[in-house]
Structure formats: structure tokens, C-alpha cells
Image (tube, rainbow, N blue to C red; front, side, top):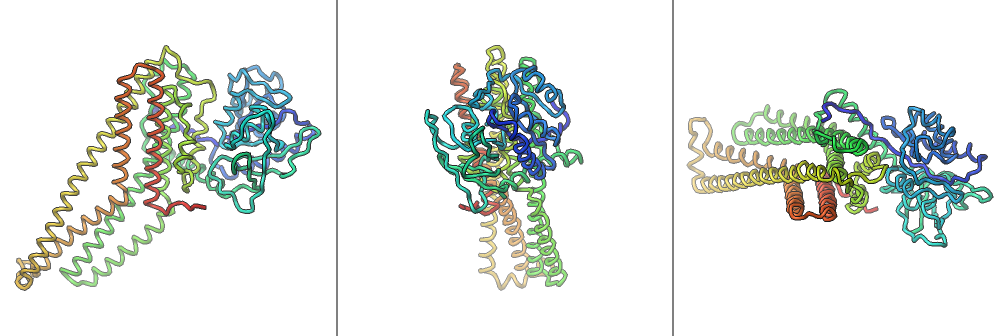
Length: 570
């Protein structure tokens, strides 16, 4: 178990792809364009580690790698083995800012620009943004630069012997970037010229099958996502250093003896990111809850003050007190709304719960079968302000080696850990939460009924005995009618404030989410107890992971809708 915070910075990873047959005469111009781009990215991410992932056997990639290291940007060098690249890579591999990723034994760069499917897959999965040194033309060669660009953008198009035509259009308005982006540096290949459509670096966004939209300046939406991501890293380091964070429990099992070092390292990386996101989510939740509670107390106090003024004593001091509370509440609201505690809580919680699910899927060896980005796209959560950056945090935990968790030796031990630490634990957790919330709901319902009956009795008494009640002071110096209406009004105010708080906290939506999650884990628990097939077990875990993530994202969307206006359709 990790007992202290490990201040791991969630990095922003830029994948580099390019044609390997560039003329050396072009290198200075390409490097200058890349340097300008990297400097701009670093300006938007002052508290976030920027990393460049590249194929270290490509000559132009090596030139860019040396430039990145000089800019204090870390490099993830994809290599076949430690001694690959011989003297050309030795100085880079020995540099403290270079992390080499070994094991891509099938890497091969040819004159056509093809690379291994493993390297291509790693770049596409692990990159937050792709930097492409590309001629702007499609190709029929799989896993070359054009194929990587189009796959990264999710541009449809069948692979065929005849290259598909790429349509590129320049947009006049700022791109509403909610998906993946490519920074394109147009290059000429030997006797070929650069793209006829675009002659300077630009940002690429998919606009449909084989259709790309370009913008020459960084889109404002990307700037916002980078700012949110940087704030996430900055706040964790600041709050952890100040001792303001309560550290969340680790997901790592007590013993990792039966795991390979690579498996344990991958799980620890996910766990550290989970602890970070969960701790920040808890911090933001406590802050927003305190703010909600403070406003509830203010509303309750104002209601009681008004009742005292109206039913007991018409003192100007009470009116001044009422106005002071109202004024202070407004000041507090306008000051603390800039903190965005509640919005951050929603995004950090969505990230933390995604990492929890991903951790156990990785432990079970089925993490690659659940496509988190596809689920995020299906729910549309990335379109909401404050949520678009969370996919950046996933990129650094994507596996860069072959699938883990598949060895028969440790499969049974992993299966037990998944069943006990995830399935059973979450099942019991949601059982407790649902039971507790249902009890609270039951007693609140009883209290509401009691208030309604009390109010009905009071109204009936005042209607029937209004004249007599005005002459009864019950030794308080006040008419009994006033005391009676004050007490019933105070009870109604308390209940109304509580109901407003419950509505603000969206307790009903939370109960629905807990019930749905309980149903999902209960169903998976029953299915796993009945199956002995490893393949079927993997299918059950895959389905559970996807359903659980969907519930998380839909709950966050409901909570966002309750707190904010829905996103624009444009």
C-alpha cells in the first residue's frame, strides 16, 4: 500500500509521426516548426509535464527528440531493444529526459514509411495530440503516416489498393474541438511538393469520411482543455504540499508477488493516478458540500428571522439582521462561484471512477477490450465545459507493451482479487448506500407527512377558533395564534430548506445511480459464480466495465444539467 502521496504529474503526451524519407535539407525548417508548436504547448501547460512519443529510429524524429530534450521536454523513445539504433541513439537513451520503451520488436521503417502495427497502435492509443510531418496525401499502405493520421482522427475510409482522396477545407470560425486533434506540419517528399491546400502548419480535425478541417491557430476550445488539465495537476501538487488533501485508499493489492514487474508497474501507475483523482474529488466535494450547507443555514436563518419579525416582534434589528445575511450570502456566492468546486468535483469524480474500473479491468487482463474514449464519445460528456480534458489523463496509463494479465499461472489469483476487491466490494458498497438512502428517504417522507398534517390541524384550528386564539397568551405575552403559526411555519421552513438542499445535491439522481450500479454488480456477481469459462468471464467483466462507466458518465451529466445550463447545440 502507498502510504504517502506520490506527486506524479499527469503528462500531456504528443505523439510524433512522419515520413522517414525526408531530405536532410528540410530538417531545419521542420524542427523550427515543431519547436514553435512545443513552446506554445508548454506555455499553456506550465505545471504539466509535456512528453513527446516517437520512433527513435527515424532520422527526423531523432533531430526533433534532441530539440525536445533541449526544451526540457521528456521523450518516450519507442525502440526495438536497448541497443537499437547504435550510436545514433546512444546519447539520447542515456539522457535523463528520455524514457525508452522497449519490446517493439517488429518495428521496421521502409522507404514507403511503414512501421509496425504495434508502434502505430501505441502512438494512436497513448497520444493526447498527434504531431504529423505529413505530405497531406492518402496512402494504401497500412500503418504509414497517412494511415496513422486518419486513424487518430477517426476518419472513416476503407483501406484499399487505390488511395482514397483526402478533402481539406479551411474553416473561418474557431474550431469547436471536442475530439482528438492533429498538428500538421506539411512536408514535401523528395520531388513532391507539400499539400496544395495548406502550406503552413495547422490543426486538423475530422469532419467526416476522408474530410478534414484545418485551422492555423490553436483553437480556443483546445486552450480551455489544456488550461483545465494544467489546473488539475497544479491543484493536486499545491493541495498535497499544503497538507489539505485527505489521501484516498490505494487500489493495489497487498501482495504483488505473483505479478510480473511490468504488470505490477502498470497497475501502480494506474493506482497513483486514481489516488490523485479520488483525493482531489473528495477535496472538491467537501468544499462544495460545505458551501451548500452554508447557504442552507443562511436560508434557514433568514426564514426564522422573518417569522420572528412577522409573528413575535416587529423589531428593526431583525430586519437589519435579515438584510445583512442576504448581503453576505450574495457576496459569498459571487466570490466562491469562481472556485468551481462543484464542477471540478464532477469531473474529478468521473475521472477517478473511470480509473477505478480501468484498474480492475487491467488486473483482469481485459482493459484493452473496453474502449473508454468510445464511451465518452457516446455519452457526449466531453462536450460539457470542464470535462473535455479528462481523456488526456487516460493517455499516460495506456499500456505500451503486449497485453498483460493473460498468463495461466497467475490468472486464478488475479480472478480472486478482482472478485473480492472489485465485484464484492462494490456490491456491498452500493448495497449499503442504497439501504441508507432509502431509510433517509422513508423518514423524510414521514416528516413531510407530519408537517402536512400539523399544518392542516393548525389551519383548521385557526379557522374554527381564530377569535378565541387571539385572546390566549399561554404565559408568553403573545397570542397563542402567533405562537402556533410561528412553530408550524418554522417547521415548514426547516423542511423546505432541507428539501432544497436535497434537490441541490440531486439525491434522487444519486439514488438512481446507486441502484443501477447495484443491479449491474449484482448481475455480474451472479454470472461469475455460474461460469467456469475464462472467455465468458472476460466477456462479463468487459460488459460490467462498460455499463459501470456509462452509469458514471450519465450521472455526471445529470448533475451538470441540474447545476448548469445544458451545452449549446452549436
